[in-house]
Length: 595
Image 1 (tube, rainbow, N blue to C red):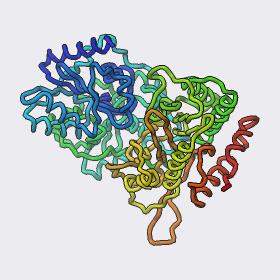
Image 2: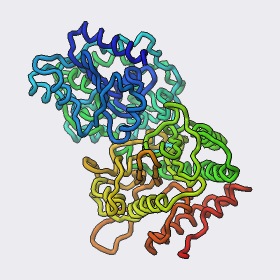
Image 3: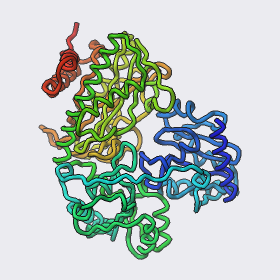
Image 4: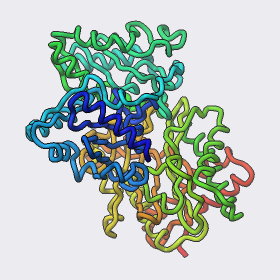
């Protein structure tokens, strides 16, 4: 790992030039999104860690990795222990840890473009309390040390047709403009590229798996908009496509335009916008109106066209995934040798048979045996493991189509499985069913629903260290906010039209992993009482592996749910499949009975 040693040494040399005792390297770029292009993968370059979240802290003679529960195993495999200490983000808050290490009078550096304002404010308080100084670096030490940093991509954007969006850009901008005015703001700074792509009905190729164009925007209360990006990526006809009131500028002009907003009330999301943008506005004399990105909720609550598109995309995707599951069974029956990579490649090949397929919506989690216990495992991060027989295989995958984004996890029996496998799978499935069937009053948040999916695991003394559900976009992010189902802070009220995942799981370290994931739409439900009720409509239509179900652990209602779900799968797919795959699907959806 001399490469990592050399990189850390180069970063420390740049830190020394700026008289820094410590420096934060988040897994983020200036857009603060989950997916970032290669030229912005600073944390990966400095540590070899490929996870989607984390924080590296570089001191003069030490370094530490802070990750959440998804990555506690993975980080030890990737970030070399001779250079990094390992900590849990929640159990050991990284800012306090730094203060404790460096002491009073220390200069602790951060690049304010890579952190949101909430983090910045909290960090400043903790560091000030420790009598140290939070230093805003003008030049990032990682960027200065990264001699062979890739150049930004130049792939073209595309115009997203109204047959997929259901609304013209001008309608959306005027609607959001009214929300900006309602907040007593003159203009909103929109920092999330997926919000902007949704507003303008454009898509791009700037990041893997997420079809966005990188950039930020100023959206005025009258619906007019200035979009800052690399305009060379824009296709012909973009002006006519987006309609009146949109100006395109280079990102190099953003700072001056923010500074020109002196005296204006500017709406900014302190979570999704970086601290640099807000500090620039404040120092220029603008008044900050701290509020959520005004495009988040309208984007999350899909219109009828988007919902129909999502359902069509899931039916299409179900054909590919079902072909894959049938193929796996045929390979297992032959005792064929496979790796996690060959399995993932075959799934991708089935999806590529679909003419509408654009790209995966995230890196496929193809995990056999013990690797399934790492809930965000990526076989591309090392040597893909051989398929383990008489165990479980977990495959979490998704696809981008012009009319929708998919995400599905299935856990598959590979050969003979144990009673423990069946018990734990059934407990997870029971939680999935309970959440799927739950009816709840308007005003309910995802935090209030989370325990419903965990209850059966909890009763046996088990749990899983990830959220139960995340929002999903419309040919946009597979992890879309603000809606989610999870422990702790999940304050957003669930509303009709939102798409979320339902994905409880269980992970036994060094043994196996289980997850049951469908996507669902929040729908209005009939109510005989005084409350207006909401519920979920599943749109993922792929069989669960009934070989892993212990029917004795299911109630009659749960057994009925499984059989109804599989009947719908069969009804939907039987005219779309043929040959051995059709025969497999029919067998896989046979009604379960008590012996």
